Image (cartoon, rainbow, N blue to C red; front, side, top):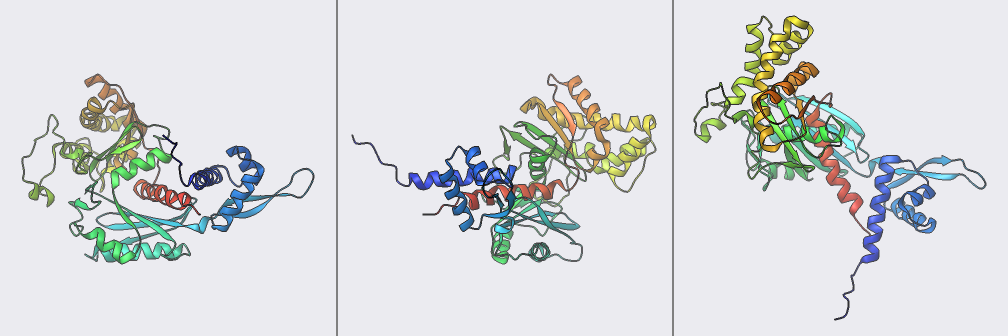
Length: 396
């Protein structure tokens, strides 16, 4: 039987070489043609052809010169920042934040708008996205993807929001409405999952392929990363840890419609959510408008606030332990406003308590993403997809 000829092999090799060069320019640029050749293992001629090809496609540009020995200075090349843009959006019940980044990952604009005076989700997103693009000095023709982080369930098959109890106007069908309105690819992402992506990219979980992130803020949530990939579950409900039955809390029985109206809170939410945190603080004389304010005050009080952190850690450990005996991750990241306020002292207490009540001993740390993790996770998600599209495209 004659060997089968693989059509398009030279084109595929060019595409692979182009992608490798672009990734090097993002990570280590600017670089000369000779440096790109050395790092990719390509000959000088092939490396020069590659750079010319990328220049013609508008993906790289000359940004300077590098003085050498004999002969003319070598030209330095870098990825063209404006070759594509992405926009990440963090949607909450009271405000929406949007940021625009160029293809190098540099954030070039950020806007924030209130959502209190409108019940039109399409209008809210439209205004925020267009303002972010305008302030970035570009238009929607350059925006290749918009990723929106929202609380609640995102169907992993359809990509639609199927349940967001504190965003009552967000519903099935909204994704298509947004895509038509913006005339660009739009993707929903669960906010805690996006925070985990940011954590893996630039935070405390960088370099880890297996970890869980526990979000403690206004609500509670969980993101699981297994072998480098987010685990969303069959319906997108993986991580709704607020509904986890735990010892010491009433386990409510309810119909799904009632739950979707916010009438029922899960057991773990009832002992570890914002209301519970404020109650713990009040018990020991610490008060605040926000749960994070209560914990911050307890931390600042030193030994006088230790009882607040001790009791909160005991509550949190129930959810962390239940997760860890199933997944056995080496790392647990505590994120959200309450976790950040508790800092390393809270993480250490949770780590000790989990080890005391289970057979697993994961390392527990505080988030390394200092601000706006959902927004940064949305941008990372959008950039990964768009770089695949832009860098992976080939020419004949």
